[in-house]
Image 1: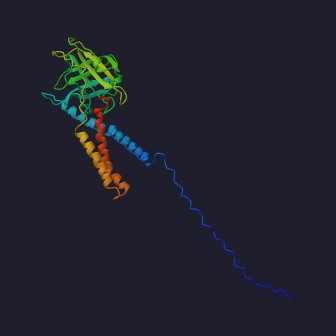
Image 2: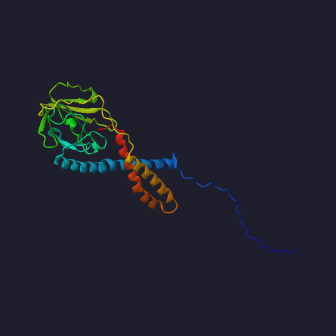
Image 3: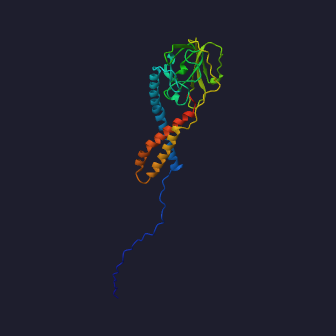
Length: 293
């Protein structure tokens, strides 16, 4: 019996891959607080930079320019000295202080340097002369007032050719309100009271230097009401209007350019307006923060 060989052609087995279940795309881990926190951080950083620019540059330039103006005014005689005009010069060698001071204590006048309390005595007159000055802000004219001690000399001269008066420091009061000082209205002594703030932006305590001298004029003693304090004007005016208007303009400009230009162009276009608005609004803080910080 003959065997029959049958050649069979076997087709290769094809492996068919089964469909896989779809995998969820990997999600990037975001900061828990999200984009809003990042934006808040950038805004905070921008405000800090603007604050540094305002305090270290704008305020310093403003102070130096106004001091030059007051020094020039001091040399020019005037029959009547109005609010904000140069009234005299105060010098304290032990503290390196040599500044022109203006008449009337206001937030704006203190940006120019020390300011004389309206209604207090003039240099050399019997009574009490009160001069306020910034400790750190706007040039810090009374920055080194803490170095003054009993026995140091304070020199003051009024405008219109008044005599140079030498006061001798009698005492230094710390963390004391000006209203705590008392003077005898019949005491024929010429007092110079210099007032500034203690260290710290929000510290309401004051550093008060009291010096005394024999009067060089025969005027009647002038003792102001120190219990009334200094009233600062309400923070509403041209600065507030410019600040609010600039802030609104910056927001509108940024929103208008949204989608029309690149982000970098939007920032460059709105940054100058926003910086100007921030500086104007920061100037309003002078009416809220301690007067002579």
